[in-house]
Amino acid sequence: MLELTRDEARRVAVRAQLLSLPRPDDVVEVVAHLGALQLDPTKAVAPSAHLVLWSRIGPGYRRTDLDDALTDGRLVEIGGMARVVEQAPLHRAVMAAWPGPGPHRPWHDEVLAWIDDNGECHREILEMLRQEGPLTAPELPSSIVRPWRSSGWTDDKSVLKLLDMLAARGEVVVVGRAGAHRLWDLAERVLPDEPVPPLEEALAELGSRRLRALGVAKERAAVSPGEPNDVGDAGVPARIEGVRGTWRVDEQQLEEIRSDGGWAPRTALLSPLDRLVFDRSRMAALFDFDYQLEMYKPAAQRRFGYWALPVLHGDRLVGKVDCTTEPAEGVLRVDAVHEDHEWSTAVRDAVHAELEDLAGWLGVEPLLMPGVRR
Image (cartoon, rainbow, N blue to C red; front, side, top):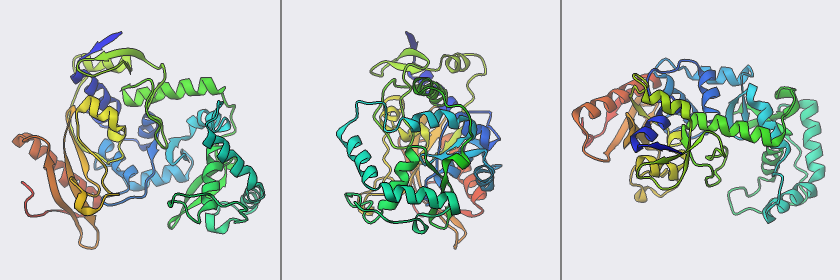
C-alpha cells in the first residue's frame, strides 16, 4: 500500500493529464495518451474537444488537426469519443459483449427486446448503409414499429436511439458530420479488421490505459456516459493523506513527480468536460474544488456561468472564468473571473495571460467586462 500526500496525488493527476510542462505537440499522441476525447458540440467558447487539445498543446494547436485525424482514420469516433484507431480492437471486444456478460439489469433486457421488436428497421438500416453509406439519420429507413419510450429528450427520435444502440454493439460508427447531423457507416468498413481480444483481457488493458491517463483513480466509480472513471485493479493500491478510501495509482508517474525535475507546473484554462474535472467526486476529493456545469440551469440560478472554464494553477484548481466567444464582434467576452480564494498577483497575471492566448488562438480580442479584476 503506497502512501501519498495530497499534493503528490494532485500532481500525479495533473501530470498524467498532460497539464504540466513540457507541453505535447501532436494531436494523435495526445488522444492516444488520454484514451478518449469527448466530441461535444457545445461551443460557447469553442467545442470542448478543441479546448481540451488547446489546453495541452497551446496556441500551436490548429483545429483542423483534429478534423484531419478523424477524416484520414488515425482517430475514430467510438461512444461519442475520439480514440486512436490502434485501440479499436479493445473497444470492439467491449462492444461485442454489449450490454455486458451479465447478469443483466431489467432495463438491459428491455432495451434488447426493443431492438428485437424493431428488427426489420435494424436490417433495413444496415442494408442501406451497405449500399449507400455514409448517411445521416434522416436519410435512413424509419420503419420503427415500437417507438422508443422517452422521458422527453428523445421524443420522435427512435431511429437515432436505435443507431446509438447499434453503435454500442459495434455494428455502426459515426464517421463525420453533415451540418447538425452525424454521418453513420458500417463499423466493418471503418474499424480495423484485427483480432479482438477476450473481454476480460480488453477490460484489463483499458483500465491500465485509463489509469495512465488519470494518474490516480478509484478501482470502482459511479457509471458515467462515454468513458468510465474507474480503473479496476490497474496500478497499485494507495492511500492519500486526508482523503477517504483506497485509490489506485500509476506508480511510474508517482516516481517521476517525486524525482528532481519531474514536476513542472503551469497554468491552464480547462473545458468543463475536461477529464481532470469530469468525475466530480474525484475532483472534490483530490482538489477540494466546488464546480458544476451550469448550462442546463436557468440563468438566474447560475453561480459561475453557462460554460465557465475551470482554472488550473500548478496542482490546484483555483477558480472559474465565465467567458463566451462572440465571432461577429470579434471578441472573447469575459463576464466574470471567480477567484475561489484571493489570488496573488502572479496567479492573476498567469490567468490573464492564458485568456490572451485563448483569444489569440480563437482569432478574436479579449474583452473584459466591467467588474472583472485586471
